[in-house]
Structure formats: C-alpha cells, structure tokens
Picture 1 (spheres, rainbow, N blue to C red):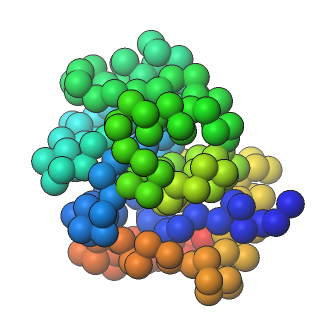
Picture 2: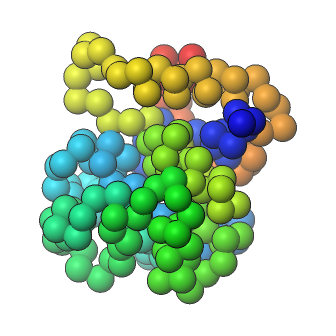
Length: 193
C-alpha cells in the first residue's frame, strides 16, 4: 500500500491553531471533527474553550459535525453544552460509510468538507479513502513525559516521510492561524520530527 494514503493535507499543533476563516474562504463548508485526543483528552467532557471554538467556527459559516468511533452516550456527553451539533457515532473509521453519512447529514459534498483528527491510521486514512481533505492535529497527551504506543511511533514515521514529500505537504495552503503558529512551532518540530 502506498504511504501517501496516510498523508494529511495539512498539519496543525492543535485545533486552536487552524485558521477557520481561511478554510471558509477556500470554499470549505463543513468540518468533521474527531473528539478524543483531538478536541479534548480521551474521555473528557467538552470544555469552555472547545465549546467557544465550535461556536466561533459556526459563526464563520462552517458547519461542524462530530465523527467518532465512540457511542452516542460519549458524544452526547461531550456535546452537552452544544445540543444542536450533529454527530455520527460508531463511525467505523477508517471505513468510508461514516464519512459519507457525515457528508449526507451536513448536506455537502466531499470537496466542501475537511476532516480534523489526531490519528493518521483512522481519521486521515479514512478521509483520504473518501477524497476528503484532512488536517492532522497533534494528539492531546496529558503527560508529555509518558511513553507513547507503537501506533503513535508508526504515525511519526509516516509524518516524517510526509514532510519530505513536497507534492503532498501543506496542500491546504497554510491554513494555520499565523498568530498561533509561532507559539506551537517547537511543539510541531518535536511531534512531527
């Protein structure tokens, strides 16, 4: 299998470092977010910061949807302060059906959607299988000193190769929020390299 199937279109240190206005200006209309280790640490409820971010994104004109392999109860708990946000639970990522159902729920086509997640082998691979743009964010890890698993190590290898491939690197034309970028440059270098 070609490794480029795992390459994201863009990388950002966090969901807070993405320039959502730029995504809207580029013609995107819907964002399919993973929850655990993308928006909050695994299993955590939504925070005032993530709630505010999702509201701000919607105020720009982008629709948001939670695309998760978790069950309904977990997603509803995360969205308790955002009752109108749609979701697809038990999505089966990286299989296509969850992504396609999300597009149907939002009423948009593939070219108008962006997947945002923390895992190369689920979120990004599934997005690529469906020809949907994907932004990989650094996974939320509460203890940076703690060891990471084999899967995360394999992801780091894929990301190193991605960085060397000019045709695949940064295909969304620098969607990162420049104000946030400088604050996270050291983190990105550590994580990606």
